[in-house]
Length: 134
Image 1 (cartoon, helix red, strand yellow):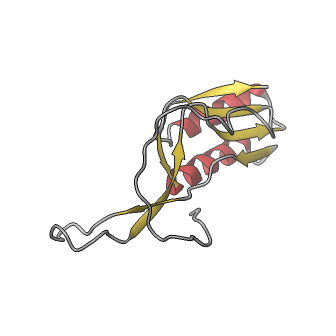
Image 2 (cartoon, rainbow, N blue to C red):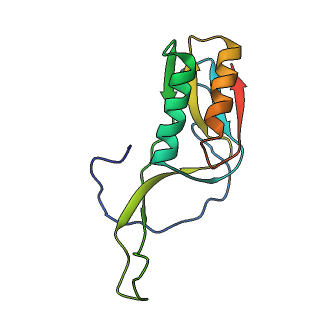
């Protein structure tokens, strides 16, 4: 799973997800991209699952670029714990996704292969996406 190597602070506030992406919202590395249409959190497991799906469908032809990274720690309390007693331990890491963020990019494959790979990968993610081309 993807997670940061070090953090300045262990736990974070939840924060708001308003507005659209100002950076990372256009194709930079590849010819095809998977772009988010709504805001949300995408977990490290979802990113890895989508990446494996893209790699599997393209049969490792071309190059896959990850454009998001899960920096945000999410805490979760145990099921039977009582209220209070502070904030829980870190459960997983998520990437904060805004509308217009480029999630993945592909280079060196045919348009049909890229569209199908991104269609399969979009089912693994918790945000609505669309395929864009250069």
